[in-house]
Image (cartoon, rainbow, N blue to C red; front, side, top):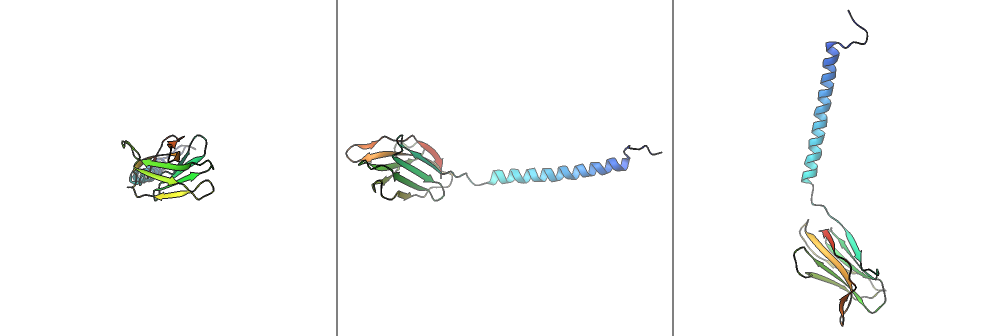
Length: 142
């Protein structure tokens, strides 16, 4: 005797098989996503920073490790960017833009290992006074 709305063994078995296949597909998708996440290359980041008066700025482009220094104010100062890495006591590289506010930005091209952490900042600069009015440090990755 069939009761209307009741599930038969065949229906339950059919539903179980469908659920089992769905879980297998879901499990495979999760495994593929996890493998992709764990084998992905190191993250790259691009960033920039300006001194408090926005008179000089520096940009770091992680792809190609290009450090660009801008001078935005005609005030007799150049723009000087410093680039180093954690644990290093002083700047390892300097990028000087003495082109003036109406001149082109200065691009300094470096070559670092992928995923290498860098720290950079920018200052106004005059040979007679040295670096003044500097930005804060920015931590980034090549």
